[in-house]
Image (tube, rainbow, N blue to C red; front, side):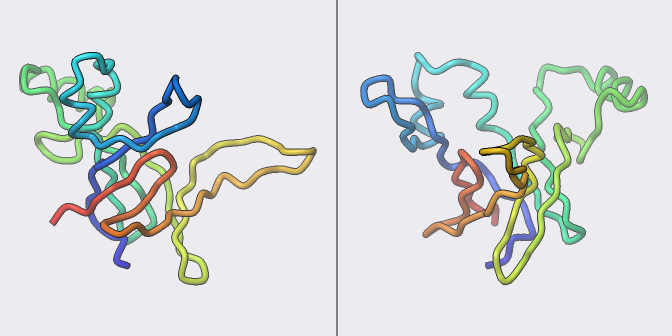
Length: 141
């Protein structure tokens, strides 16, 4: 599998109040759902860009109604980091490959039964992409 490139959210896990479990739901279904929260719909526009130097850039489109001058001012002040003219970087994380497997640094900290837990989460391959924590991603062509 070639991990380098841009990956888009195809599915996400959502809580099912009837079964009290997490179910996979397609981004298209959530976007069409009038009852879905706006912040959930907005997060489905995020993309994950895996770079050759071990970075994962979490990016999102800049809303079309934001004036260009405001974008430039925010970028100049350091409040906003642009990826390109229409996309901003929300987060920068890390990825690595070990023994033929890919891992994502969630940066989560904690312990289980007094033992420190690794922040590195395995990225698993799916039939049409990858699974990263609560998302199933497909590679942009």
